Length: 337
Ligand SMILES: [Zn+2]
Image (cartoon, rainbow, N blue to C red):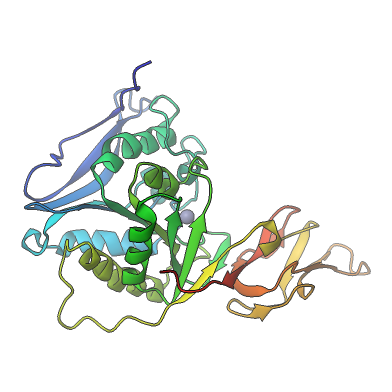
């Protein structure tokens, strides 16, 4: 069976030198626009021979730091500063980005769960399919900038996805170069539907990270992306570091283990956190109370941490349902070689 063809067309020529800013046009035929297109913004900056780096944001539409950093980067970057090629997707799941939602309002698709995608599976899967079949094969490395979305706060971190292949060492090197204060190592299935796993499956060095959350815009998150991105591009010798670049911070290395690292709501109610982001907690410690405001005589339920670690994520919405993630932890790992 032949590979299904993409439904995306673009006027961008990936081989043309210079800076191009245009669109990936995805067919979307609806009542108000029978021959309509979703116009996903893209920029390509190319100068001479060198690696190809993909920078992307708006994979989830309600995560904004990367969207801001990448649109600013595209406006300011001078092709003469580039050696190689940089492909920039600042608002990849555009319908979700315009709606300010995690998933697409067109098909309820969560772009970061449907890679490698399907051209006939609705707009979200069609976007994933184009990135997987057209862009990843061009790339040496990618960085997908996330945040906690509307429902989670995060301690900001950048991450590398390791898959037991030759690219792992370069992914560690690239993450060291990005130099976040907190660095997370991901290991996991290549077929979980995430962009970074799908990229790694094709031999692309894949970085990710959470740079804010709670549906807010983190100034510190934007600054971390902008300074780290320049160090990341310098690692691949695609851009030089500016002479006045600040020294990178020291990095703490962590991993997120199994389900015991996560605390989930056991009841429907109002969530009262009992610890703060960045706290160190111990196994058995109370994590949260869930209050039943409709019945004041009922005592709140208490949720506990199953393991010890650093609180890197907590729910950002007061009301909770059984199964909502309230917290997750990370634990220290040695600095990788
Ligand atoms: Zn995300």
